[in-house]
Amino acid sequence: MGKRRWTTPEQRAWLEELIPDFVQAQQDKSVRSFLDDTYAKWHKEWPTPPPAAEEVRRTKGNAEKMLTISRKAEESVRTNKSSIVIRLPGHSSA
Image 1 (cartoon, rainbow, N blue to C red):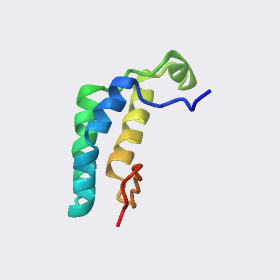
Image 2 (image 1 turned 30 degrees about the horizontal axis):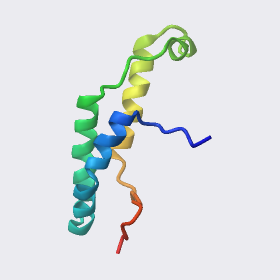
Image 3 (image 1 turned 90 degrees about the vertical axis):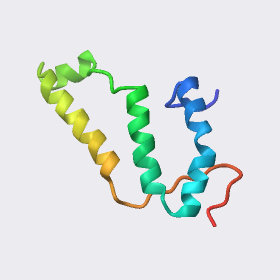
Image 4 (image 1 turned 90 degrees about the horizontal axis):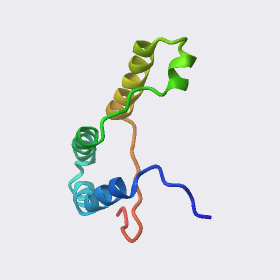
């Protein structure tokens, strides 16, 4: 059995279409900008769903607290300035 993907087939196809642009961003040393733009487009296409019942239960029914936690986590990922390494099959990072 293969490894379960975190994307749907539609999302994966959408991301794969961006590979040439990503490779160009690597060459241009503009990966951060590329990822910021990609992140915004991703969330426009696939907005973050509301919290699941289990997530709300863990916050003692406080859906607003759960949304705040989710938004902070997303913002942390989007604004993280640490190094990002994405390796694509068949492409060198030279």
